[in-house]
Length: 171
Image 1 (tube, rainbow, N blue to C red):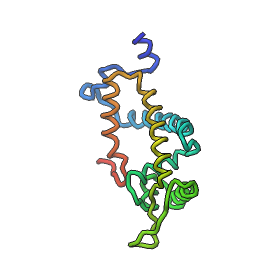
Image 2: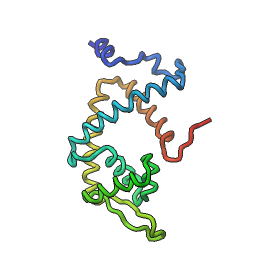
Image 3: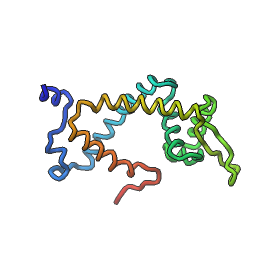
């Protein structure tokens, strides 16, 4: 049974999970991530619809997450964090504000800037959507061994700073 599940999941062998025993070309890793990301985003997109506020789109979820992590985030900073143009980020912020999930207010130090914050309704919806997304990924990761889950956690923590706004590729 265990070998059938392993074959079905197309898992790497324990030896490949040990970075000391394996060297992976950067191009191979890049190709694996480029092919994985659309599947992960599609999975997340489908499950965003199951939470309270199920009409939330991935871009709106990302904006809300960015604001939750940096209260009073400016529109331009939100655009940078999300990899969007300023008009696109402004449009997402406007949609969330019309839905009562996000509040835009003028920056007291610079009236040209708008600062974003979540409303109480926005916080409630974001918490619900986060729980739904986490529950979904719990189900996906459940069949993995403790070693595989540990490896993925280590990989996620290693990757996180590489994708922060302003992060520069290492030479």
